[in-house]
Length: 62
Image 1: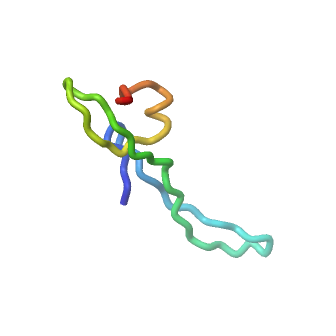
Image 2: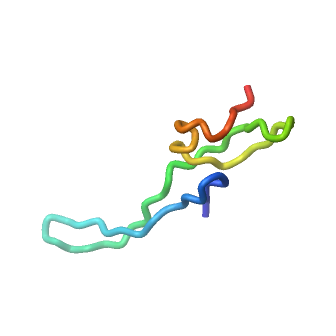
């Protein structure tokens, strides 16, 4: 299971509800991206959610 290495966000259980009110369990996944990150003067690949990318919690290596 993918998990954000910065904030720990992964996913949650929910129900998909049809018009007849039938409930089906689904797994709502967080939007996790593999990015190259600059940490401690080095570059490494991390799994980070898009909300952490937007907030600027990491510095992307270009």
